Image (tube, rainbow over all chains, first blue to last red; front, side, top):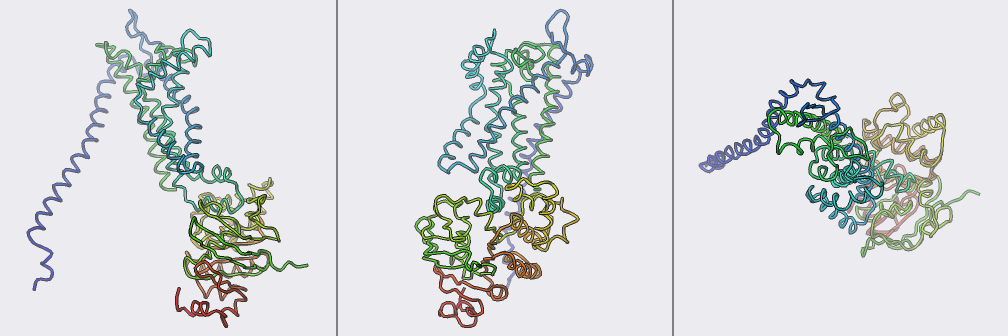
Length: 299
Length: 253
């Protein structure tokens, strides 16, 4: 009689070895991400700081002129910082209302069949490469903007804002839609039972209940807008001016992309410094995103 | 003249697509009384309750024939204002479902939808509603706290206060105590005894003792049929139908 020992035996040992091995594999692969992030951070900090140190942090961040190749070079990136901030704010101002309304439509209003069609469109929009957005922007939007506002060129900040506001839609829509769909049906029923209309229920109960998720969608959109390179490069004109809605401008990302192919020596170092500034922006946005998501799970 | 029956269902049938959930229901609900709807799970009692304030409108594929009159008017007629109807016929749900807002905002939500009240009027209304639900003394010092911080029993009384805030005439309660502990259940039953002085109450319960304790009239549902209805003491002491007797003596369900 071996009632308990029946569960032990040789195969148990093998199982243990397999378990231990698999855990080691999972751990090792999990580390890949951390190593990548650490490497990028270290690279940017090590390579970005020298130029900032030589120019001076304040002069670098607040300088209004960028003449990286001139006889009398100047390395002020305030125009790039402001352009990135303005284009992001502009894209959010246009993209969020459209995205939120679409999410409400998908989660609460549309019948399932129509919602599936719109949803497919949203997913396709998310899958379009940014160079295609830029291309369409260049061929269609830029001339249209030029004619509409009677400008010398349509490759201006406004065009970039318009392209970015479409590009951030899929992220905002899918995150907000998920948050809205997760609002307990009971909340909405309680609202209807008090004599609220569907619109009142959506805006006074569903949207507030999903606000953390919607905030996460907005932050995701901010991240996408501030980090976009290719499409912006193709429609914004890329002149390192202080930003103006109707003039060409250059953002943090495009400032790097414009000169990276030929820059050497100190000029190259300043581009890495711009990368470090951009990295800091993205980090802040991610912290805000994590905060918004955590609050979402608590509520 | 005192109106006897505030709600009357006549030949009411309800279909979920091909499935008939209610079959020719004829039931009168007298004013200022508690009417209990009993029956085993899936018998149609909750479905019937939700036809009385047209909450079934929200479910796709529901078709209704026959009529339900409220103060003599068919609520399924074409031009009925469903929001006004639901304001008059309030509802409390099985699972306490306060909004994720403050206690105050939960109660103020309904009145803010319908009336433009001053801050003082609103404060007063919130207090009256919370008193009406026997919750005021427990929450008066923390009205700005989240409603989700309350216990289950308190949450359910908050939901009752919320329903009272829009001055309804009828309260529909869908198994309001089934998710609560015995002490909270007792409090709510006690509260219902007070509520029937001012409101007509229709309650769905699968707890027969509860129906016997609190209701004036009882209606027994079985597989979509209304088997029997009448005064609660008669239904429980001498049911006319064999199936009612079997159910209330615990032979099935």
